[in-house]
Amino acid sequence: MLPVVAVAFISQQAAFLAGREGEAMRTVDQVQIGAWLLLSVALVLALATGGFWFRSAKVRALMEDEVTRANRAEAFRIGFLATMAGAIAVYVLTLLEPVTGREAVHLLMSIGIAAALLRFGVLERRALKE
Amino acid sequence: MSERLDNRLLAARTQRGLTQAALAELVGVSRKTINTVENGVFVPSTILALKLARALGEPVEALFSLPSED
Image (cartoon, rainbow over all chains, first blue to last red; front, side):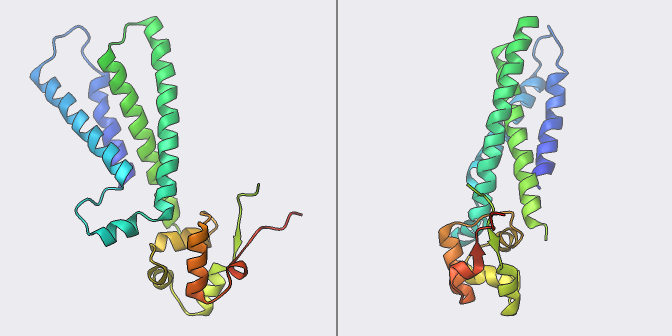
């Protein structure tokens, strides 16, 4: 499930990356950015807590066992490293062309969340493989 | 330090006629955890190793061992 969400999340960024330079921000753009922010927060919370917020405590404890916690820790590690690599890339990019604070935050959050989601999804799939 | 841990969890489980799901329920973890421990993908904590040993009625050192150094 999470790799699918990761792909959807990344594809959502295509519109942002193909932004119209110099044009005034339209209402639809603001809605899109708001949706991205909400989705980002939801994904970070799901990654941090394991999700299953509307299930019983017993189910949550079962879903949050040792392997899941280890996979999540590894996913956060990869997400952090990807964010640092992204930050370096954005820093280099600013030497070539101006990057606004909002664009930089958007890029770094997207890179970090997508990398962590993909890694977590791959590890969970591997764990379920017989 | 070696990060590998040999185990004979699969043999001990099947010897008792338990499925992964049944053992998981006995220990209170998900089937995924049993699967990853059996396959050597995941090294369990001391607590989980002891729980598995208790559920299978074997000493923990009979289930888990360090790989030989040669």
